[in-house]
Image 1 (cartoon, rainbow, N blue to C red):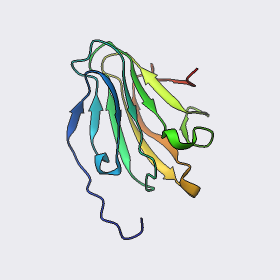
Image 2: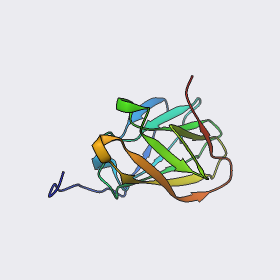
Image 3: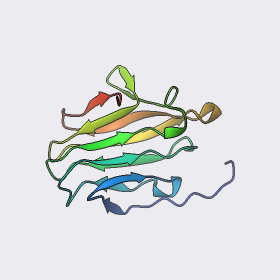
Length: 127
């Protein structure tokens, strides 16, 4: 990916149902569950270049899930509060989180929580 131009966006994307798999071109955007009446899931992009950031905000009291890329769940993590897991979730209105890719060694992405609003974000591993 060296030398590749990556378009960063400042747009807000509302997901009202289902799952949205993010791409590197979604970097810089804010992703919400505004208008949803059930849980929604955002999946972080596979092959994510180091330094790209994604912000998520809970705008209705429905669960918002953030999943790591599906290619290799055994080694893609979100590091959060002295823990690391495959995924994060919250359903408290006003809670927001920005996640940054800090490592993509062998395409096994590792993300950190750069900033957070609210204390209701929790880690989980899907069944």
